[in-house]
Length: 249
Figure 1 (cartoon, one colour):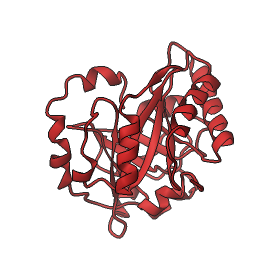
Figure 2 (tube, one colour):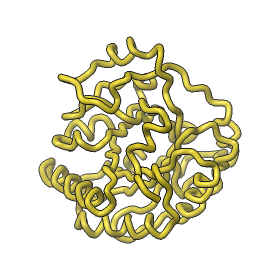
Figure 3 (cartoon, rainbow, N blue to C red):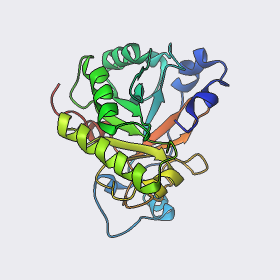
Figure 4 (cartoon, helix red, strand yellow):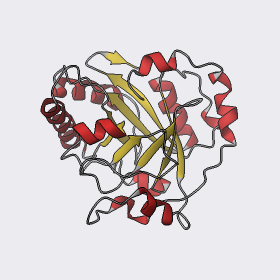
């Protein structure tokens, strides 16, 4: 989900085999137990690493229409987050299929919206919710804002846009949405968003060895690679992830 999203996906080859390749992926390491709690300051990467003995990381993927036929049944992922919408008009053509397949498999699932701060945040949020709500819901479904673009807006404007989108979706659904971005982008534009669970992309760091950016005290999901597909680990168990999602179907 790194910006620009389209160009990097256009260069991928062999994704039809990705499900089989990833089916045997092993998730090494473990995570800090404080993933859901606040601490008195930023935990360092070394502190995270020192706590990685008793609590295994949860492995997951994020998918969009660039992997329209991804085989979830052949995947070892314990959670899957899929693109639903972008801007005020784009609907991901593979969303309904992925949503249904994840529902059949029974793993944690989520839907994300790629935001454009050049648009009205309420219009974008309504667009996202209209597409997601048109599909059957399950307890534990996650909602996510993917924010990687500024559309030429200032730091203050992008930050205010994100706050409006996130709070609106929370008010409408009762779900506290997750915030996704790259580490540097989140550090710059994510001030004051610490109440929203953090999903952060950082490819140069070992799985789970993340120092949370901006005002976050902890991280929830780490996207650690985009090869051959976006792969992630969560500091939470599948049940803990579900607790962040919808509380009723």
